[in-house]
Length: 373
Image 1: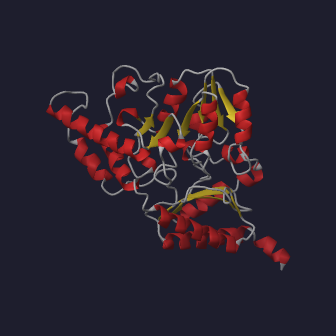
Image 2: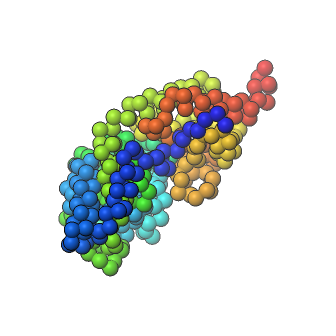
Image 3: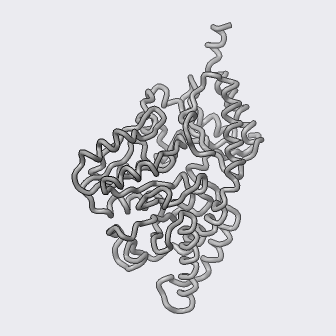
């Protein structure tokens, strides 16, 4: 093994410098944030400091931040906690949205995975009763960015509420609640260099949100249970790092260099979402002749960590529902991998990946090249 390359930041981003130290320090505080004695007040201060930072990051008020166990719970909290007759979500949403409720009506996307705004408005026009629309800001597999602000404008014409899963977008592109025009935003710490097991839902306080977790008055009655003090404090530190998005330009440069190199090796290669706005760190690539599972194993043997899509499938390598929704045939979708870079990656990492990608590609397609010759 020549080196260790981590290209799976959309699954989990390694902790930012300072996060682990904050977690360690917080673990010895010893107080419960709901207690009124000195230790409890110290714990509460750490919780509220982090809440303020997260609110500032998305242009919300601190009182609108509800801490959860992660993005999945945040999505479930809004989709199951808002009482409405209809829930609409795009077909490329994360499973934690698509599986969150029984009455979800799926909205089709085009070949790039972008929602059809005209069809969406026609759907709303024919729908009676309160509607909640859930459209992710950026796709976790392709990186494609959805026109959420436009979705919100249309939705508001019909009195619909709007939720966006911004778990992947946070820290990579600008995230402003007012500009997006949404009522709810889901966030997750471990996608921005924070700890796993902590997330947040930004809520519209004018809308009744029913708690899924009952038994205490924490989070203003919207999510019961003793606060995850160390996780929340770590989340706050991670937010400080991504607030400026100073690492984004470097990451985009690496991603673009990786794709350019692969295109030179295989000019006809497919990069899904490559012609539309997408996250600066994400590349979803089709390799002819080699299954996703085989690619993952071959790269792993060389110390390169990638994925075949969402990491939430717990080891299952199967054709992506996102690619299927985009009209991609399973024979192609089965050969797709996702590369997602982060601030720790270097050009040496990219060069090493391209070197190994070329070996796998040429080996699998050697017979075709011989026929051409």
